[in-house]
Length: 207
Image (tube, rainbow, N blue to C red):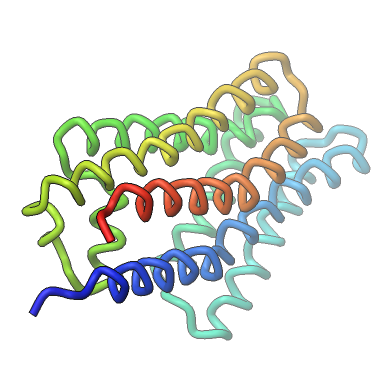
């Protein structure tokens, strides 16, 4: 039996709130960059010390996540991202390059979301379909498919803003600016995109 519109909306709201509340990795991801910049500044711009401090903070976060029995894959990928970022900065000798992988990953994510919209398989629909248990049945309804496509553009914009802002500070060599921008454009921007896409989605689907 099809889900009543009011139940579907409630389920979507629950799922969006679940995503919003489950964004701990987005918050934790801001810690190593801040630690890197602080250690780099306090050590007289020593990139090796900054990288080591960031890696240590990543290990502590990973250890705490394992203690809470979170998914091993997400813990490993999070730690590898920190180690790789530190390695790139040490290799190039430029502190701003600690943020290079984050810049590139946001650019890749933006392109991937655009591609998913263009081929009419928006990632937002895939994620919510998995959370709601409806899988990909939403693709059979042109109205819902169009709603997911429209709402997905907010996520494209999210990545686009990061690419522009982080790209500017990276190109101009502003390490502290990168750190501050990374904090402001992580969870706050994620939450804003979630709310905006939810508003678009609920407003586009007939009640």
